[in-house]
Length: 299
Length: 270
Image 1 (cartoon, helix red, strand yellow):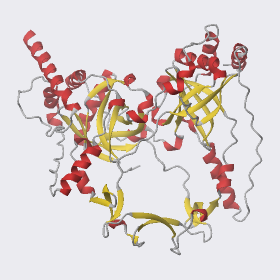
Image 2 (cartoon, rainbow over the protein chains, first blue to last red; image 1 turned 30 degrees about the horizontal axis):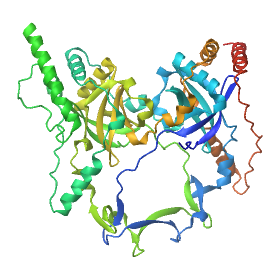
Image 3 (cartoon, rainbow over the protein chains, first blue to last red; image 1 turned 90 degrees about the horizontal axis):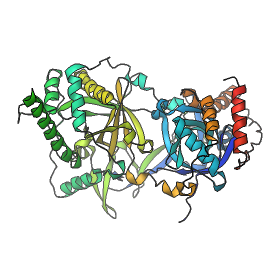
Image 4 (tube, chains in turn green, orange; image 1 turned 60 degrees about the horizontal axis):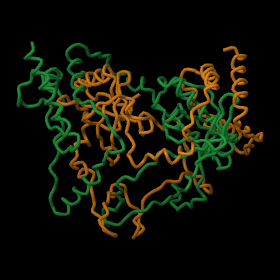
C-alpha cells in the first residue's frame, strides 16, 4: 500500500518528552450537486470577471492586492510578504500547553480533524501519551504554526492513534449563552416531560453516520424530469405547529397513551416520503401503544 | 444583537411540531476583513458575471441556476421550483432516532448551528423536546437539507437551546487504519504510566476561550495601525530568531524526561 501523504510533519511535546509525528487529513468535503449559473436571457453559462470599480477595467490577478479599509474609501495596503511576516516562524512542534477534562471540551469550536500518527522512532512516547490521556479522560491543547497560521489544536485519543482537531479562533465562535439568552427560562416537568421521555424511549437506537444517504440529488433529478415532461410537482403543504393548548394531547397521542385510535394527528403532514426513517416509526409507535395497553389492563 | 436566521422551519417529534430557526455557531464578522484593491489605481476590485458567449455583463436578476443535462444543455431551475423538491427534510427536522451522545464520535461532527424557537407559540414544545433529551441524556438524529445537500444532523440540548450539528458523510471520513496501522498493538509501558498521569494531572486546566486566541490577527491589526500612523513609511518586518526543533526522545530517555517534567511542574508550585 502506498504510504499516505502527510499534511504536516513535526513533533509533539509534552513536558520534556518529544516525539516525531505527522498529521493527515481525516475528513474531506465531498462535492454537492453542482448547478451552473446561467444568463436567463441567453441560456449561456456565465463567467466571473474582476473589474476596477472606478475605471471598469478588468484587473489581472497579479494586480490584485489586499486592502484594509480604515475609513470611508481609504485603504491600507498589505502585500502578501507583509501578511506572511505576521506569522511567527514555525518551530514544527505541537507543544502541549494544557490538558482539559474531556467533559469540558466545547465542541462548537471544532474546525477540521486530522489523524495524528507517530514516526517509527516515536511510537513509545506516542503510545504513552495516548494511553495516559485515555486513562485520565483528558484531551490536550497544543499550538503551532499550521498552514500559515498559528492554530490551536485539540488532541485526543482515537483508537490506536490520536486525532488533532483545529479549533476556531475565539472571535469566530458565537457563545451559545448569547445565542439563547432571549429564550424564556422554561423548565418542563411532570406529565409532559414523562411523556416526551417515553417517546424518546420508543425511538432509541444506534445511528451509523457512514451509512447515511443524501436523497437530494435524486429528488432534484426527479424535479427536472417533471419539468421536462411539462408536469409540476405538487406544492408542499407547510407543516402545522402544535398549539400550546394541544401540546399535552399531542404528546399523549405520540406516546400512544389516551389517544383515540385513528384520530387525526394534531400536527398534520408527517414525513410522507421519508423512507428509512418512516420504517422505524410505526413499529415503535405500536410497541408504545401495546405497552400502554398492558399498563392500562394491569391497573 | 439581531442576527438574521440562516434557516427557518419546523422541529418535529412524533406528533409534536414547533417552528424553529437556526443560525451558524461560527461567524466571520470579527475576523480582520480585507478588500481586494487594484494595486495601480488603489480602487476596489469587484467581481461580476459576464456571459461566456457574448462577453456582456450579466445582471444579478438575470442569473439563474442551470442543471446540466448534457454538454452545453442546461435546464433552468428557479429557486421557487427547487422549493418543491419532494423531500420533507427541506422544511422539517423530524427526529427519527435518539442515541447516547457517545454513540456519535467527534470525527463525524461537521458544522454547528444554534437552533431555537422561532415563535412564542412553539416555546413550550421546543422546551419539552430539549428537556426530555437532557433528562434521558440522549441526542436526536434527523435529516435536513442545507445548502442543496441532505445532511444527517445531530441535535444536542445546550442551555436554553439546542445545538444542531451536521454530520459528515461516510465517504468524507477517511479510514483510520491507513494511518494508524503502523502504531501496532503496544500499549504504554506500565512503569511510566504513574509518571505520565502525574504530569497530566499537574497540567490539567479548565477550558478557557483564551486558549484559542489568534496572535496573527493581533499582529496584522498592529501592522495596520502602524501603517495608519505613517501612511507613507514602509513597515519593517521584525527579524525573527530562527526556531529550532527539539530532538526526538528515544526509548531510553523517555523516563528521564518524564521525571524532569514532573519535577519542573512541582517546582512551578502547583
